[in-house]
Length: 119
Figure 1: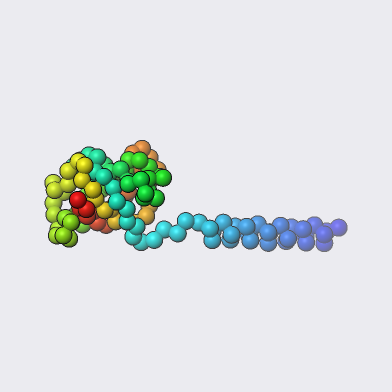
Figure 2: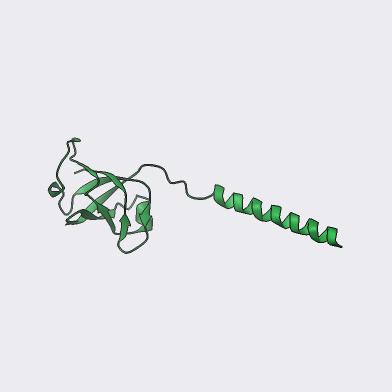
């Protein structure tokens, strides 16, 4: 009887370990850089409030995202570095970030690498 219980426990342990591995393999793979296009809704000191374009995956996460400008490389449409004052409401921008969006409202990108003016 003890042998059956021991074998059952070992079998369950193996099963749970295998299920745990399968869950880890299907986890979202966050890459170092993710890019999306968005419209600037609001320009604040140290951040932009943007709405991702409808075709962007980020739109499924949030309709409004706060993006920090203080740590990001800011560029115009020609790749020239610019000051945050260049960005205005209604402009289209390309956001390059680490792939992580904090789930709050508005959502927040904490690590933004670049913000490029598209038009």
